[in-house]
Length: 183
Ligand SMILES: Cc1cc2nc3c(=O)[nH]c(=O)nc-3n(C[C@H](O)[C@H](O)[C@H](O)COP(=O)(O)O)c2cc1C
Image (cartoon, rainbow, N blue to C red; front, side):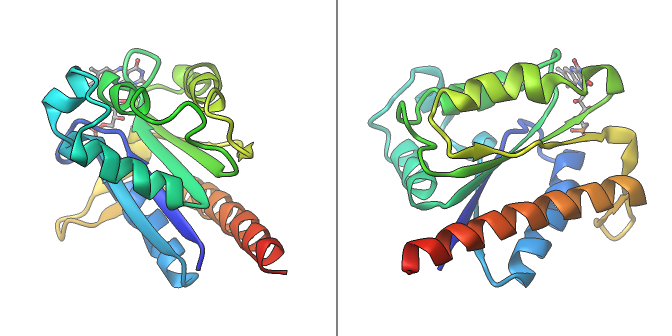
């Protein structure tokens, strides 16, 4: 069965990014594909700061990435780029850690002025790890995501459909690749 990993790059406990990812995960689950989550904020801080390639927690996370057919890299925009904690983990992935994988970048930011952080900050870093394909990506404005009282997220219709379309494209590519490998 195909596998997808969601690399969740927010250092914050309750980021609107999590609301976005709840939707993404629900869509993946309804397609019958297994998705695991690596939340960088849950990785041991010292292992990240000291670049401990031999850390058990880092190696376990790296195994999830290695076994995945696709990786969704989801992050808030910090200083027109992505948070250092996400980069600290990415630095601990193998040189070709995204080889043969399809990658979907998702960013959430406070200003549309940083829409291109996906292209200028995320893609150059991700492309060093030899991915098969990096999809166009989705930029979400944080004002498009609100928390409901029950803890669920309300996502504005226009960006919700962009997210759905991008995840559908990812699933299509993953299924195509998996079927091809099984022929
Ligand atoms: C340290 C820091 C730096 C930020 N820098 C930017 C930025 O350069 N551009 C931008 O669009 N948003 C920036 N933001 C806003 C976050 O991207 C946005 O608040 C976040 O994605 C969603 O907010 P939440 O995690 O609080 O829900 C920054 C936020 C923080 C905490």
